[in-house]
Image (cartoon, rainbow, N blue to C red; front, side, top):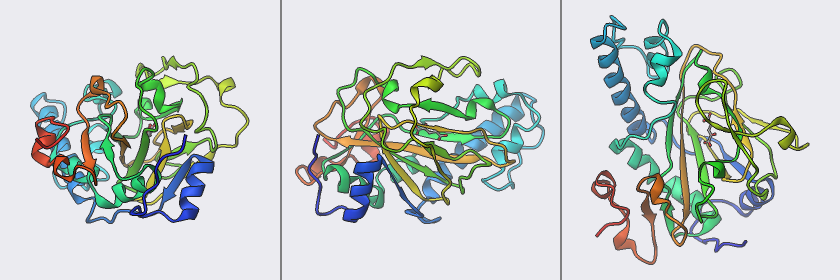
Length: 288
Ligand SMILES: O=C(O)CCC(=O)C(=O)O
């Protein structure tokens, strides 16, 4: 299927061609430390809430308020069990303003616009991933994102995966199978080992395509669509591999309300309808 590609987008023809042929694209250091600050703040806020709860429950004595972003959450759970951690979910989807600022970041929208045009809906499925050491459920098995919304009539859904710390092979970066983005939706099963119910593919479904390992510095973006086979390895470091995965699609596709409220992120046709922070906090997909 061909989509209208916008002249306003930020990607070069070579980048667009690479994305279309390989099924993914890496934009190294797309966002600066400062541009990530609102999202980092949102994560810090959540970590502080968790520290308060752990402390109130008598599970930790020290809330580690002065420990750096990269380490604090990992150290809070250092002497606790994976179950203690997973009570908070393997990924988070809170409505904290910093996440809206990130999802609306012009640099992200410009890149996505290059691929699918400038009428952009931010899909309701976005995840903040606090992948901490030791917790096996942090590793994500091979899958296609589409397996999480098999019935949605929404195509393409583009994932924009952004780490907030350098992601590497030790802390569990993303791995992808290039040129799998045109694959049909494969049968999947629910992963049983870690109790996460992640959707997973069997070894024999992965084909012969060589895996590409994608270590990237903080603030980089990795774009791929919801058919591309990808996974991430366990975190063997002592830090938190913080990342977000955001998703975008053209506005004329199924907004997938069963997954939550997405929002109109950019529109040249109806700029007055683009959702504001207040709209997003109130779960209104458009500005009334
Ligand atoms: O962040 C990860 O480790 C995995 C991300 C992923 O599978 C996704 O964004 O669909």
